[in-house]
Image 1: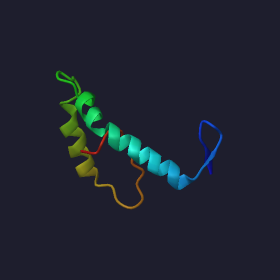
Image 2: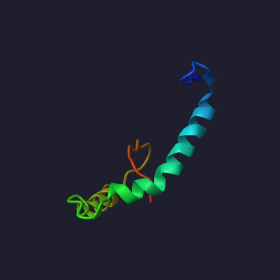
Image 3: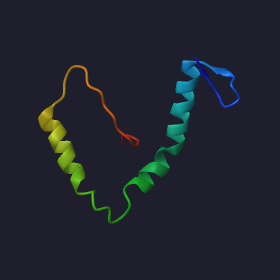
Image 4: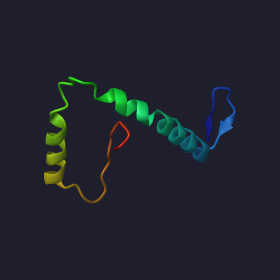
Length: 70
């Protein structure tokens, strides 16, 4: 059980629903601003995807990522 800003109890399920709603609302803006024109790292994106494909993680994997997943 968590507490909100008013110290009222918030269940784990409510907290997760709130986080999902927040990130869904932010997703389109994030995609529009996370790879601006002229981004010097944009070319690295395919290299990262190719490296992950070669690595081919299996079993229990912790994925830490930002963005919308699109």
